[in-house]
Length: 397
Ligand code: RM4
Ligand code: MN
Ligand code: MN
Figure 1 (cartoon, protein in one colour):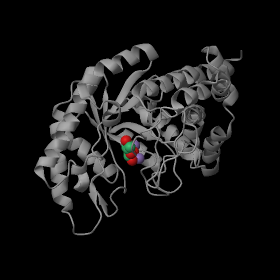
Figure 2 (cartoon, helix red, strand yellow; figure 1 turned 135 degrees about the vertical axis):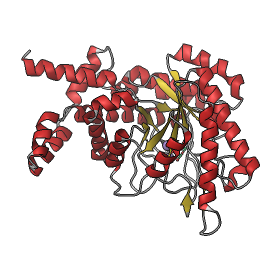
Figure 3 (cartoon, rainbow, N blue to C red; figure 1 turned 180 degrees about the vertical axis):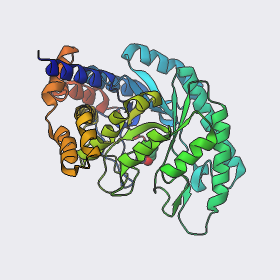
């Protein structure tokens, strides 16, 4: 092997070995839009089924060792469910990942959770986050991912500034309960369900709140939670610079929080985000960035969509790893715009699929995970086993 070839080989192996992405339990469940749900026979409706699907995705891709859990949907009995999850971790080989409190379903939260004008409801919301932190601690989970539905629909109907103060106070109380090594990830979203103002609407507000909450708080970037045309990689660069980047919820969008599969609409956007992370290699490592998927598959088969997403993420991650950064830096320094852009674009357009297939084979994984899933008959089997049992459709999301 020529020196440059073996250097390339090392780079590919290092990039792919280091890349792991968390999958969400709710991505396997029957979910829908506010208009309705199309029920799939193969959808998971129990925590056992969600772990089984996660294990299948991990078996095929080797890149998804953890499963994000939503407290209300996956641990409805709180601490009593911990032994169940522990047993599933052992039998499936997949560990519980980030823990997601649910502050958006109870009737009390009609006018907000941590920002509700009623002190009693704020307290109830804080208590739920504290319980979630405790569950995470007992399960050995590092991250608590906090997303609030809070906001208002009509101008003048709420005091924006009072709600900031209530939120700061609540987040400080939550942060106090974190064990060493645990992190509170604060997610932002510009609108929906609130349509006039959202209490944590963008990365500036989330950054401020993370700083106010304490040193173990970080910002969570959900790629679907931005206005059209927003430069997300610039936000990522800022969050890396300010040491506040905690992690991502990956998905794609055409209009709003569409939760489409990653890279289906704009793969270049995800590539540019990954490029910022690779460019800040040292700093990014020190940050410990949690890569997570937050998608709900209404029309695609759920396990298939998840495998497709993981494969796409690996492809874009590898493409971004292959950017010749020395060359890029020289072009940037010389202000050679076209040459710099071509260096970036060249990596984006290179076909990394053969490299990925070779890496998978060297790690005893299926060269083509999607084809392997189809050949395995897994989806047909679970559809047969689960199809008849479906009655209750989980809510959402
Ligand atoms: C929100 C947000 C959260 C997710 C819920 C279900 O839009 O993305 O991360 O947990 O949806
Ligand atoms: Mn999200
Ligand atoms: Mn979302």
